[in-house]
Amino acid sequence: MNILYITGAGVSAASGIPTFRGEDGFWTIGSKNYTPMEMATRAMYETNPREFLAWYYHRFATYRHHGPNEVHHWLSDKNLITQNIDGLDGKAGNTDFIAIHGRLDQMTLFHHQGDDVMAFNAPWEKVNEDNLHSSLLEVFNINNESPMINESFKPYVLLFDEYYTELYRISQAQQRMLDADKIVFIGTSFSVNITQMALDIARSQGIPIEVVDPDPTHVFHPNVTYHKMTAFEYVQQQG
Image (cartoon, rainbow, N blue to C red):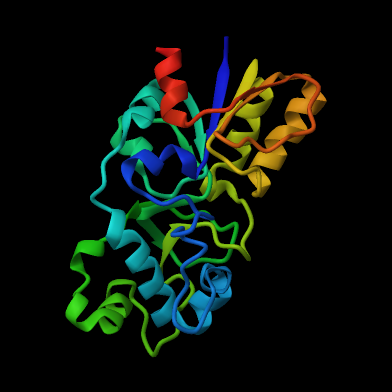
């Protein structure tokens, strides 16, 4: 059976990474002057790259050395689309997972959306915390506090005011959904476009789904099984 797993922040919780909308989550903690929803935008990167990069650096630097947990290892040989940008599925050994929202351990050339660019490792280790803002601008090749198309670099992360492109393997993700015999959602709140896309495909194609979450969101689907448990408990149950 071709099972497609679609994971969210709940999968990385056991690695010590806060879920996005929890009390200490990424979307709860902003900066001094901006909310997270304002920070994680292309507009902020273009107009205030100092604040933008510092916010992402603090989000990433705090957790970049955390390792994958048992759930990531269990998923390492599975057909997987993850919403997480922590890159832990890659660390666990999954060589063909789709990071549909990007990976914060990588970056790309700053480009017009839809342009054909590659992602490559981001040299966060070169950032000098004693001179954080200037160092970040230097690492991301941003001069005069304004990023330049096809010259500067941008974290490989899909921002709120951007859309899915082939850089994020959106066509492959949709094909995996269409080809699936079953779709299992693990640790996701169904609050992003990719999960709605998967639900629409599952409904239209008659693909059964499973939802793994301690407090699962009720979804409109004629063939759904709920597992009211954590991702870790689910993996232990699966063996």
